[in-house]
Length: 114
Image (cartoon, rainbow, N blue to C red; front, side, top):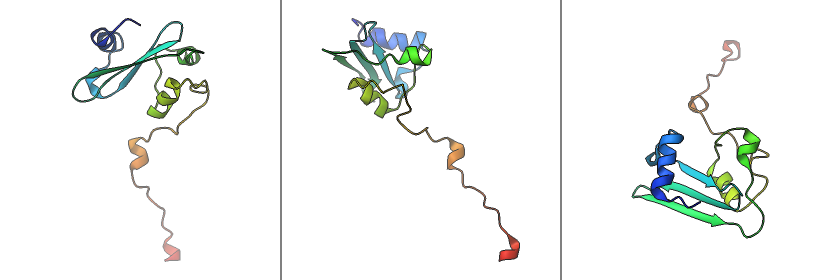
């Protein structure tokens, strides 16, 4: 957890194949799960937030999803940073809307009832 702005942004760009400047928030957790860092671009520069737990451990999301990374909503990230163990076990937020969800639905018209 000694990595700072440049190294964390290089990990995002090179290993994760994402753009740091896209507005996404990236979470890094130490191997002992006692420390976490959040990296994001606020429009004017990179921000790094760090938290160390005195008691307990952060939830091991990557073990449950069997992937190198996991996607979360901002609410789930907030719960994770607060040390909630329920994050990753059950869905905490409804699924994100897709473009198809925003299209107006065609209603069937019954000509005999008009």
